[in-house]
Image 1: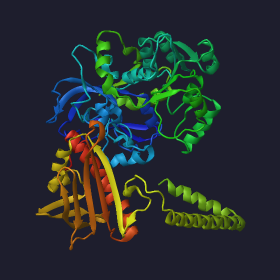
Image 2: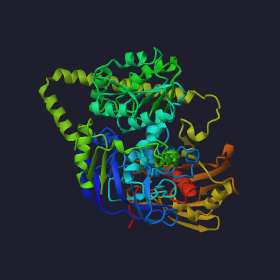
Image 3: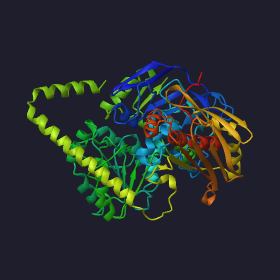
Image 4: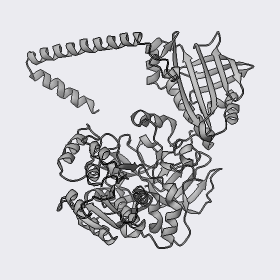
Length: 389
Length: 223
């Protein structure tokens, strides 16, 4: 089959690789009909996530048709499914608490050794990401082997286009969980750093959850415009002093909840970010956390900090004093996708949530390398790339 | 591949400097080494003399790793299944290769068991054990007998996890590392050392018991 594979920093190619087959009893094989490039794929593309090997198949946002099933799969051949990017067994302590992205069993025992020493506990597995998270072949391919196919995949009724439901795989539930982690109360202001797909879905979700005001922060005009169209007020950080603006837009209080939808590759020329960038380039520090630092500084006393943005290593110049003294609460994590898919599918079917506005480019899988290049380098125009094998 | 140009670069730089910085560097390195050794010795002394409070931690987490010449390692894992089920599966030793990757063959004759275990560098060792304690649904303990390639003893203990969270499985293994501590380090490099293998085996046991399969990222079955 054809698949998008990693060959090094800023070098991804579409190669011919062996087709997947059923390996374990609960597996299914999916013929991919639509797959997307995620903002977190750009962290791989930029080479800032360790444990990505040459030849790895990338991609964790995908859907398709079931073409083969293992003995214990509950799927049927021909069904259309969206596959969550988190691989979860459904049986362990964490899965039963609906902490699906903390699954104990999906990451193979050998690769669990890679994260246990650095994180204290081993990470669970994700599709098409680093070997730290299992090194499972990803979805930017013609076919995917889906483990635990009785737990993750969401069966999609006929009549709903791929583009309406594809983002159930990651970014829609991720934006939703980011807003849920804000524990929004009536009258609340929520500030969102980053108007990428997750940030935009977080804006949409926060408004649906009853936030009185959502303020979105970015510097790309088109992305800020999308946020505005979703109902957010916007701040262009290149033009405006963010902390002052947030204070003045909240009656001197500060936002009740803040969302860092940026993660480890902050943009901008703030002093801390320039230092972080230098350290990241020479391999001294993994994360650039300007957005997170600013979000903590902005947040009102006793407020909530929600971090859907991806981080992998260590962060210094962290405003821990502000965090403690203001009594903030912090909620974060990879998305527990399976917890949200049913409810979000219903909201899509009822027309409450539309996700298609985000898609700016549709390319054949063969053009995926061009998609990566532009999604990274023309972020204003290229808001979301959907690939068709 | 990335290291070579860096080395070349350093050699090149060293040639360009006169001898004085080299001398300073050598003295610095020497002082550092002396300091490091002194620190290490002080720490060893402190550890020998510090008897400490008899605490609640299991012995395998002690800073001391050898007892009576045997290296001790152990690990616990919580498995979301009933105790009796786990005991029954483990007690039939022929089941164990399903999750113990380094065991090629198990042969049971009464309370004697022969284990063919993969060792570093493509070799294998034959370990012969006898069950020394067997309490249903609670504990199985074994010890090596004469004729075993490795001197070892171990036990697996089962107890209910609190709050209905299944069963806590604790495995403890003591063994005399072939080739001493150096042999143990080499075995670790080959990832064929009981601590490494035990940790992974227990995780695979959990996978098999909780999900009915051992997870793998492989896209195809092994040939």
